Image (cartoon, rainbow, N blue to C red; front, side):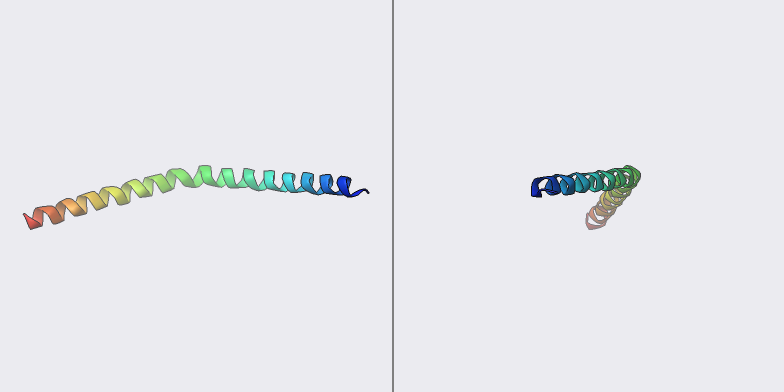
Length: 59
């Protein structure tokens, strides 16, 4: 096998592996992102409520 064929073979294999990993990652992120957004919103809301409470206590 010539070096260029070897390189093509390797890059093709790497691309396939990357594609598989990418598909796995995207499936995981599709599952995780809504939960992360939901958690962030919840934390954000709690922070706003918390800071409002502190504001009320100060005034």
